[in-house]
Image (cartoon, rainbow, N blue to C red; front, top):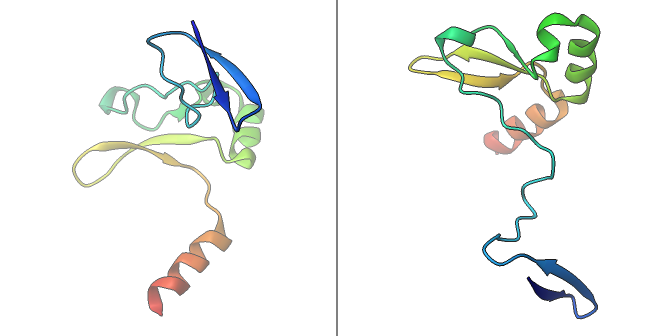
Length: 94
């Protein structure tokens, strides 16, 4: 184990061989591979059997559904942020 000093005053222990990864939140689990076998299913899996969990996850923006695109299967969000979409379109038209 070694210590890394961050910002001159915070010391954090780092185990040798394990990279420091702030982009990867602790406890985040990746969804399984989206394929024909699980098409039209939700991720997280609890939303498949519990309607209240599905509504809660959709409101939080964490609900994904496995869909088939033109060439492959892909996890896509069930909900979208209208404000972000209109801002993106406005930037594209300028």
